Amino acid sequence: MAQIVGKLAVIGQGLIGSSITRAVVERGIAREIAVTDASDKVRRRVRELGLGEARVIETAAEAVADADLVVICVPVGQIAQVALQVAPAMKAGAILSDVGSVKASVVDAIVPQLPEHIALVPAHPLAGTELSGPEAGLPSLFINRWCILTPLEGTDPSAVATAAQFWEALGSKAEIMTPQHHDYVLSITSHLPHVAAYSIFHTALRFERETNSDVVKFSAGGFRDFTRIASSNPAMWRDIFLGNKDQVLEILRRFQGDLEAFAEAIANEDGDRLVELLSTSRLTRRKVIEKEHISLQPKPDSMKSDRALARPYSSDF
Image (spheres, rainbow, N blue to C red):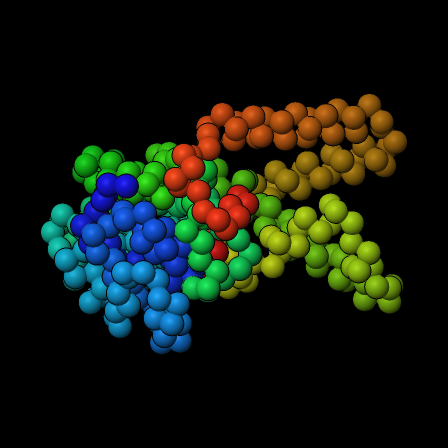
């Protein structure tokens, strides 16, 4: 595969960062790769793992020196701080990006202080697993997954094109939208499901305590489907919910209204209304599968890994 960038710097080597590192090494997407992490322990572990030609650097400022593309892979609450720390050390014309699942508030914090010689192209790969840390990285993580880019109006088109090519080389399908639209979309497709999953487990555990009954061990398929989501990093999701507060609250209120509609239909023994609500859900499921099948066609065999492809999931670190 042809090189997309000369030097790549990846800041943060959790699940997403180490997956990027592995994929870039495996496919030769960059001539040089410099990686770092704020944690001494993580940096040591990355060295132990020996992720190909990737060089482990002690500080973020050193890692980004002369980099053509810098990808920040840290929790949402830390992205702006890290971006503003490394931007002065980046060369003119370099591209600064990230992988966070909240965009508007982060972009608003970065842009006023960003040097003019840096092109900001935020990104959000819609991929992940419930695991975290550098050991969890998968070179196949981004294959057949969306990656949303949210550049601001006026961003250098060549920088946006390079960022899109980078993610497509990792196996993703790039889509461009505004930071605000991204946050609305993700509030329903990712943030709401996490709120629901966490809430369902709180309800189950409270019921278990109140009834002194071991109900969780009898988890059926529907309940167990939420376990992967509900086992996500709590600190990371705290930052996401607070960073996208307005959109999450709006969607939660809409969701509460829909729950009330179900409760009312059940209370009134309104079978027709229940069938109507349930049928709508089935049609929506079919629509999701059909769109995913059409939009995300399988990549060539050369891009597949022996390790299983990760299921669609929001970014975790």
